[in-house]
Length: 297
Image (tube, rainbow, N blue to C red):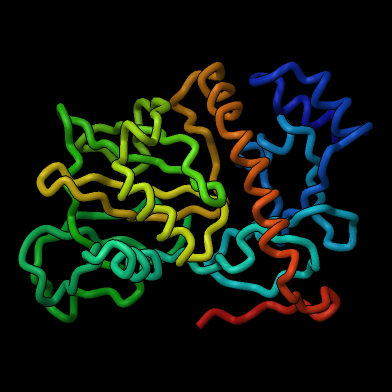
């Protein structure tokens, strides 16, 4: 009961807490294993589970109906559950891997060769949960190239003095919503000042939506969010980052807008769980007692 009360308290700014507490404590409709990391109150998974009456468990030995591979590191692992698992095959969401899959699916490149690229480029760390980046001008000397960083095309998204980022959730075979986030042209990657809910059909063409979902499948991403930029010069979209443990909805929105976004996403979240259950029903899974981490390549 104490855990259910804590969850209800964390959700009180978005929904009436009493129904959340009672559903989780007395009659959770599903039990969701999150492993190896635990989603915090900032993560979308935490909020959607609370809103829908799903109890999150963190021990693979506890009873659960479906599991989430929920790991902050960009490293695949063998999952210790024989239940349907969301993002079972999605461990590597490094910038380098994202660029490789993007080019394969969309047919044009995000990554550039810094020693030969003539013009502006972006240098940033290869790992996840990094908000560093700087604009450089190539070509670069070999001694100035950092092998632990990636070099990508500079994408101009500035409209009326603000850069526009398209945060795009993916739930199985669906893009339920898009957040258009704005930040000052001269600001950092985390300096967003506003965000609004958009209909995916108003943001992307049908072929672009199909491409984004194909990109997610190639990456093994059942659940997560894509950072998409549209270059105002050539009109193309570019997936520049993937988060398989997303926080949100964006904090730049009001509590009422965040609650609205969660209600809009919830049906897609339910369908995601059903989709994964059907997909994994015939899939052989290693015995959970033999689970072991796979070292990164």
